[in-house]
Length: 154
Image (cartoon, rainbow, N blue to C red; front, side, top):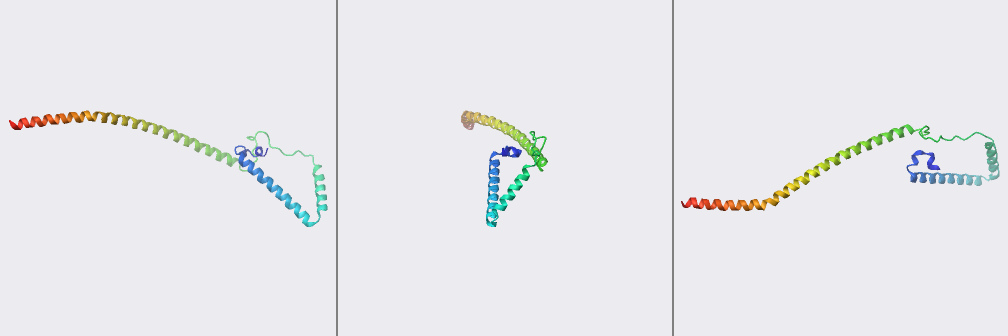
């Protein structure tokens, strides 16, 4: 129930639990301090009578307690509600921009990887043909050397 009061705590139940525990501890500490003060003053009976009178006086009030409406969008009690809304919209816009940027970067990376794969395939084919080309060049060199020897002897 505590997390339903503040709408921002619905998305963070752990924070709501910690806040609830802290509030209960604070209330208990305050009540204990008040009781100790009453005991130290020695007028416990008088204080209990005052509390009883205040409770009786308060119970005579028949006004309904204020409750927020069920639709939070219609009624935001927080002073910072507009600022929270603006900041949320700003963050949402930033997230959308980052997602678009990431999509563009992923496309560029994919294109570059494709280019790298094509280049790798081309290099691999060239290297696989290299031994044949070297062998042909060696044979031509030998033939040219023979031709030179023949021309030198003539």
